[in-house]
Amino acid sequence: MKFHSKRATAFSALLLSGAMVLTACGGDSESADGGDGGSSSEAVSITMLPKNLGNPYFDTSTKGAKAAATDLGDDLEEVGPETASPDAQVQYINTAAQQGVGALIVSANDPTAICDALNEARDAGTKVVTFDSDTDPECRDLFINQATAEGIAKVQLELIAEQIGGSGEIAILSASANATNQNAWIKMMESELESNPDYADIELVDTVYGDDDDQKSFDETAALLQSHPDLKGIISPTTVGISAAARYLSDSDKKGKVMLTGLGTPNQMREYVKDGTVTAFALWNPEDLGALATYAADALATGEINGDPGDKFQAGDLGEYTVEEDNSVLLGDPFVFDESNIDDFDF
Image (cartoon, rainbow, N blue to C red; front, side):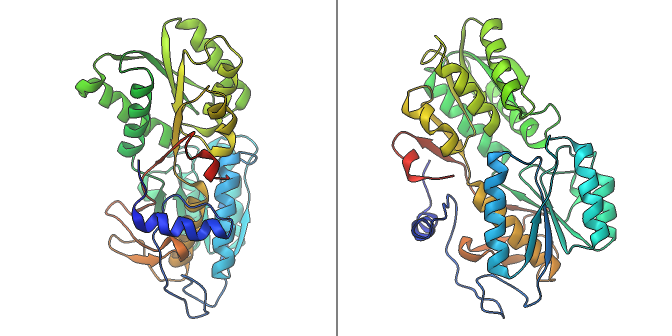
């Protein structure tokens, strides 16, 4: 998978300043206060609510969000539970509403369970932007989509098919059973496996859930290999899952025999690519995703956009983005990491 030329240019520029950009297009619009992409001189208070704290993926997305907030002159605070559950997120949503924050950015642990709390926050005047994992559309103002479900499913199937030679048993190691994004990607992969003749000789034999917990994901990998002795490949569309599975495989006699791909970060996966446990995997840049969510939240809170299809806003060095028909904003295509390029990235 290749960069578009404009994105590659933006990446090169940001690399010099220490920010890693996978999908970007240059922009030079300036706000009234002189910032790149800012829309108001008045600071917007923003609360960032990931699925859980201490997750390297969300640490990176929050890093991007904070950089964007600094660019805009906004105040951004990260809050969140230690474990990824919808009930644990509700209290933080309620607190944000009570504090009267201008915008709330949330990665949903469930598509419906946090809707009542989100809509109460919206009724109180807080703009709600989901990112990474969406709620039902009526519960938010915008969804910042890291990539389409079709695109994410496609790249992972292409990678595993290539790695196992186009035939054999595969399994999926997912996050939680009710994770919106995971389930959408898995459904697309299942459909593609059933309908695409290129995958006629590949059989999905199991889907298991590690709940985005490192030890549980590690244990589920061991159980998969025991339950399916003929397994040839594992897809783990979660950064916690793929790194835990790689750690298990790297010290087992299945290393190099059971192939592993999915969605991971370069820093988590570098050693496993270097030692031959993993050939290639994919991801968008979570730092860009957090930044884009923050620019969108600011644009909503300041009235620059309403979140309607066709609305356009500037996202700093990421460029101009347009709201799509489903009231979402698409970051871009997934990017494939392998031994040839993994050392070019640091997140």
